[in-house]
Image (tube, rainbow, N blue to C red):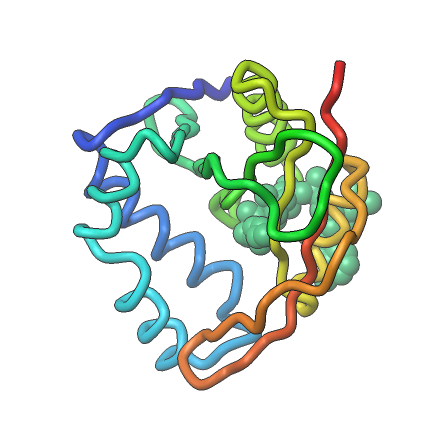
Length: 172
Ligand SMILES: CC(C)(COP(=O)(O)OP(=O)(O)OC[C@H]1O[C@@H](n2cnc3c(N)ncnc32)[C@H](O)[C@@H]1OP(=O)(O)O)[C@@H](O)C(=O)NCCC(=O)NCCS
């Protein structure tokens, strides 16, 4: 049984650990260890975690399984760069430990993010996903996300990855 907790700066260390562990697990077959380390160093510092967790522009939820952290979801209250008819916010990240893939935790975190976005009066959730991330593409396709625009080139160390912006209408 999973428990979802909204977290603040007291969980900065934990978020930093989850950022790096889940990123490494997700991409170790795609990027070299050096590139993964470089990405984590640039993006997943303790300072970055404190910045995110102390900002009203973000909403972070950590999932626990018997008090052990097993994944997280992060919403960024940021309008989609591609045109959408109505207010939108970004589902910045849903990352779970690889031991939890296929468990339903990803969907649970998504449904929680949906509630938060609806409470914030958003009509759309959008996100950016690497075109190489077939598991995530399939996951979001099952949740009715559709591609709406090409995304930015994502940099992981020396790797450059094309991405796609996906969105789903979340009007009740
Ligand atoms: C994205 C994530 C939250 C999804 O959770 P999950 O438990 O893996 O999701 P599900 O098992 O419900 O769905 C994944 C689907 O991808 C499929 N899949 C797995 N590997 C695949 C691959 N290499 N190619 C295509 N499909 C694949 C699975 O079979 C499943 O589809 P199905 O239910 O039709 O069989 C989780 O995989 C994760 O944390 N990944 C790492 C972080 C990440 O990529 N986040 C998104 C960044 S935008």
